[in-house]
Length: 191
Image (cartoon, rainbow, N blue to C red; front, side, top):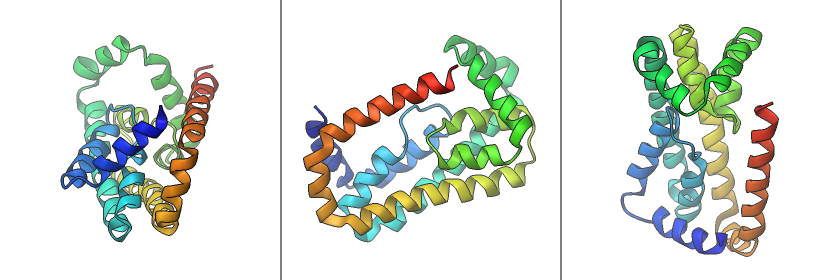
């Protein structure tokens, strides 16, 4: 199952409009999209290692622009737009967890959410809702997202064709492992 998907993703990664797709995905992932940017960034950096840093830069820039949009939604449109949407998808608990984390860790929660697989979008909107200072939000997002995306691009560039062949060999095992980790993370963070 994952082998066919891997071949398809590698074809998309080599497409002439792939940088546009990456930019769009990076933007919307910071607001509402559930699929991480890395799913597009990693194969693109692997397919064209000489453009890996460019792709990481695009992902960082558009992810932070999306985060600013998410912040603006939380700041200006929480009651009329965001809250009903959050309620319709059952994310009220996640917003409350985010609020609690902000109270507990402050600005560090933005860094943690921007660098790790924790849903960054929940924290961008919550930062706006809580009217977090904008400049620290932007700087922390740039650092966290940049570290994450440049790390992914760097690993793919470093691994090159050899890594691509290895990934093809182990893609099914890695795919099921990722699903298992996602399910475990869901249960861990939803308790």
